[in-house]
Image 1 (cartoon, rainbow, N blue to C red):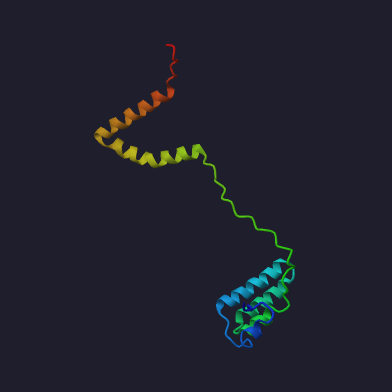
Image 2 (image 1 turned 60 degrees about the horizontal axis):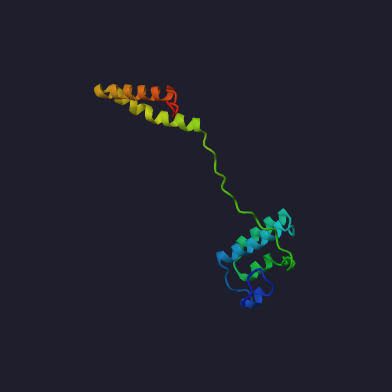
Length: 142
């Protein structure tokens, strides 16, 4: 198994570190620097300095120099797991939904009212809805 840019001996494992590092290698080095910052092993200034150096590094040796001194955390200690983001479903206000439906349907009813037969249809529909809403329910024994 070969050593990565952030591991000790990476320069020796990569032919004295003269090989060019890829963008993915630089990103991996920056990720390890960020992890050290989150764990409290680097200050904010050190993070900025090392991240800048990692971005301009061209070889594995330069990347190894940037990540030098970042020892791995103790083997038994793991960082706390990050909880997954739960999608919270928003409740829909029924009054807002009804008003929205009225706003959408009103222009169509208005256009239908302007036609000769459409006006009768709209008036009949409104009368039916009004009677349905105001009628009292019948009891089953009558």
